[in-house]
Length: 192
Image: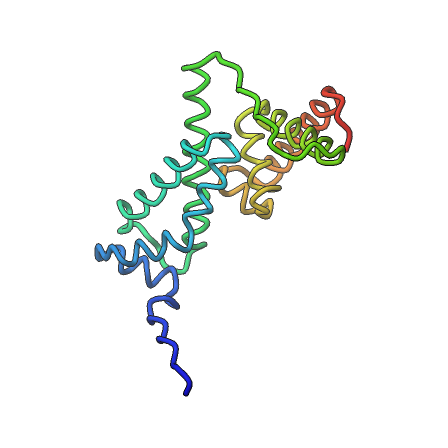
């Protein structure tokens, strides 16, 4: 005797546009479904930019709240919810970085190495730590360009739109960011 699996609800296959139409009508279940699909994206961006999981969670929640709050402004057929959340998370992270500079002079605490003490693992962790420290030392917009391009694998055109820049200006910004990273990593004496 075979048992039938419960059919998936039709809403599981709804497009983001259809779900946003329901959110506009104040359907909390539609917002929950969008959050299940996309909440990790703003969290990842914020975490990589802010290096703080608690702040990243705040940014992700704020991005989803704005999705609910401004649902009436949604334009169907546009770049999509993921692009919208990417822009909100990037801008919110940049705002938090700017506020941090005014509120704190503290150095960023170093992360404790929890990996096994194998030689290759140590070298890998040293490289990762150097890269993370160097990314954190970048100016805010350069950091955003690196996170969007290399960690979130956004095309330059899309990352430029998120940062409200012309493509050539974005590519120049990314070039400067890579040069700064290379110089910083070499200055730390870490080799790949």
